[in-house]
Image (cartoon, rainbow over all chains, first blue to last red; front, side):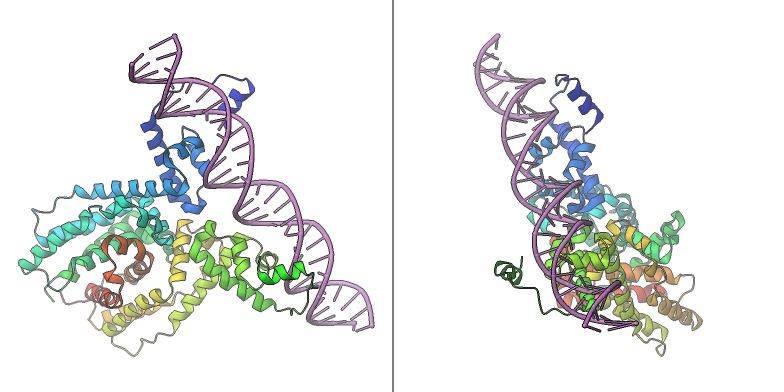
Length: 223
Length: 223
DNA sequence: TTAGAAATGTACCAATCAGTTAATTGAGTC
DNA sequence: GACTCAATTAACTGATTGGTACATTTCTAA
């Protein structure tokens, strides 16, 4: 029990001084819940812990979000939407296919790196066989920007004769995702076994360049 | 409560007919615990559930393994050791570097695919920041076969002039691991968003070939 | 044979945790 | 300014869960 609550009880102060602010309360809960679920996993997360780190009370979590599972699902949806939105900004249309591809890979690598909480939520969701994602209507029709940009780049590259044909953009996207995702998701176990040199600032830079080179060579026509 | 236990209680049969078999009991517990932890995560796993799926009682889990965390750690160690042992068999010494590399990548891809429970444990361990791995002495000095084989292949390829120099084997290993790991770890969320074509039998085959090609081109000198 | 140690089963407990009940306050509306 | 409903708080609860106390049985060595 927090100190303020205790004080209020012992001296019997009247409850006072609060304003109604549903939106602020809701986003406060979502923010804290995201951090908790990403850090502790679904089962490891305690509703009491969330409420303690919130400006509001546990009752409000249930009032606005129903139950633990619903809260988790809404956290997941919000995280997906935020991260996807961050992919929109990239403008590659004016670049040559090779350069555009390198830029896209490089950006994706960094984008994943910048959103470890999102990565962790996706890991957790996979542990749960994607059960919550299944139930989410909002995520089904998420615009997946990255792959549409990739489709465009690949088509241009093939037309210009600089990319080899016969690859599906989906496969390239899968490869880029795998490399960018793993870099964040498996950092702990990998560095524990093989050392952390790959995860220093310079290590990450050369890792990113390696990934860019990897994908660039894969689609390149010259072989 | 199982039926036999119930019967024994209701009719008050004397306990009888059991043999002492510590090794069988221990390995039975480990087997069930591995499945449970891999499926439910650490917090999601219930000791009662493990004991129910075991031939023995909950008391024995604590008798042999101490507590939940110790049990998890020993499950993790056993899983690492088993999977690492499965990598030993591959004999690449008599093959040309290019072929050996392709074989190693292909094998690693399949090896991961064959051990989803291990992959899930590693995912879970990363969620926990590798805290349990840190405490494990057994894993620290695990022979990591894969990377030693890779070092050998890469050196031979450079000497023979078929691989370009300036790449670290560790980086190549990281790439192979990333692609092979992600293929299992993110199957659910990826297929939910992009469809499951990549995870059909033929999809997996072409994905594996793509990964092989990816790595082969990366180290190739001809460019 | 028998004493002591190792192995096992049963019943139980204290703590934790998701979710609820009930009462109170804020803020528009007529 | 009374009425109404949404927002909020404090306190509570039934069920779950990791872990244990204690009794009992099997094994082994002298």
